[in-house]
Image (cartoon, rainbow, N blue to C red; front, side):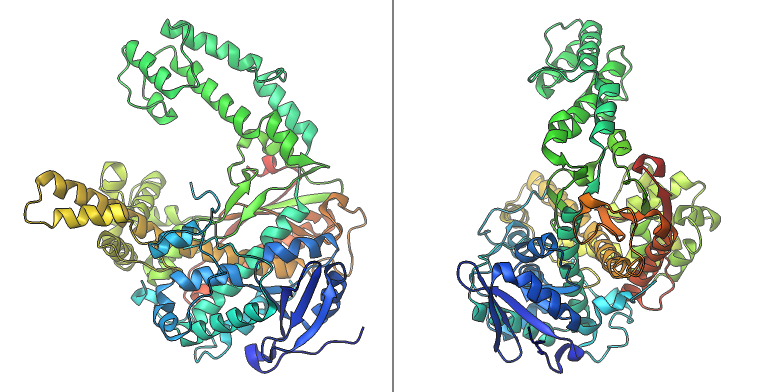
Amino acid sequence: MARVSVGGPGENGVVRIVIAGDGPGWATLIDPDTGARLHTVRRAELPALVSKLEGQRPRWVWHDTREWAPGFLAAGVRVERAHDLRLAGAILEASDVAAEARRAVEGRPPWLRRGPAEAAALGVADDVPGPDRSGSVPAATLFDDWATAGDATAAHPLAADPMAGHPVADEVVGSAAESPDALVAEYRRQCAVIDASGQPGRLRLLLAAESAGALIACELTAAGVPWSADEHRRVLEGELGSRPFGFGKPARMLELAGEVRAALEAPRVNLDSQADLLRTLRAAGLAVDSTSKWALRRLDHPAIRPLLEYKRLARLLSANGWAWLDEWVADGRFRPEYVPAGTASGRWATSGGGALQLPKQVRRALVADPGWRLVVADAAQLEPRVLAGLAHDTAMAAAGRGRDVYAGLVDAGVVGSRDEAKYAVLGAIYGATSGESGRLVPRLARAYPRAMALVDRAAADGERGRRVTTLLGRSSPVPGADWRALQARASQPDASSADERRARSAAREWGRFTRNFVVQGSAAEWAVCWMAALRGRLATIGAGRPATTPAGASGPVFARVPHLVYFLHDEVIVHTPAEHAHTVADAVRASAAEAGRILFGTFPVEFPLDARIVESYADAD
């Protein structure tokens, strides 16, 4: 096949190719600059064509990464860069940074439908159901074409003080069979919105990072988490006893239930019914309003210890018991289904498998293949470090330089202990006004006025029903109709004191949400930039010396090279041939530093990592 040459001066000369479905079983490749059709091929032939074109390092443009990437990975083809119209369209539609530009550019096409998270951001009805809301190539190569195209601040679009900025990840679902011309038109529309926005460099970086995240999510599922079903069964049997038949309870839970019923003198109480259990606890003379473990721990009664243990085992059984093992683990891999930017703040979610909630009991089952290792790394105190960078608070950044942030606060004399430091920081980010956190927050405000001013302003905007915006341009949802009705009622001449109290309470609650949104959302942006930078480095490690013992269950792309297998907000796990483990650990750290430079430029905020090389996830604790 002859080499296809496309692309022009746009995106710093980087090649762009649109892939679109073109009738049943067919796909078309298009040059978005000219609209010329480059190839129309059967879908079965597409991976081979894409593999050849990857030599030009294109940015693939498509409606939805989930439509194309899994098939390529199954065929042994991994693409480097993409632009996901679904994710990008959602971000641009809700972003305040792009508000003026949206009004100047033709509107979003109806086929790119809204999901619940975007609908909430816009204050409109959603169109479709969405997910549950409850050393090598420099990392910049993933972003350079987007972060610099047409931007006067190309050297570093985020170098300016961001204090003037004000924060939604969205699930957008559309038909993958839209016409090639429609996809090209939507791509051009999105580029026009970005170009006309007030901060094109930031938006380009955000869309490039989120599109990289969509690729990573597909790769995490394709590679899978190395998982020992035998070890998992041993964990369950050690905790619960033998697997019961049918829907019966395991022996250990039955034993504990008997102890609770005897202590409460209630032989028929249903421990799995919150209402029944609450009534029984009150009948036993216990002043309790909740059956949560936090409420129960405050009680002094012989039933509490076995009850707490029963609830712990019940969670293990329901979330990661034998049924979960049967459904989610096969051929030595757990393959969760990630939803990139699946929450309003841009944090990831899962639509199956519960990968973001793996309890410590089952982490012994997450074990490397023979001859391989796990590199487990998590960012220390990510959110306070992000807050320092957002606010350009040099004193707060200095508190975490080369050390634990909380220890830095103690050394600076802000608080007396590490625990107090943690309470103070969490209170500042989450809006605590009472208790230990509320007592300590004023000390933080005196020591770090710029950081506190940023979150206080975000809270004040939220209390007024305004949006707030993350560092790169993701904007928060607006309050719903009920919230606005409460505020309107309280402003009426005949409003009662109860109306005013309810309105103030609702406003403060929304202010706490927006206060946290700017920090958590910007931390999510750091995390996806970290993963994207690491993904680029891992692609080159071991390329000249692949693993002698393949990890066959990881699939054709990842069987002989280090690869990401797990992500949890500020933590990653890389599955790597043992001989590359230390190189991978260095790459993980270098990528974290790169993500910090990408977002905060030369501002001196550090993102240190604790990177451990282990055979089992449990050994990393």
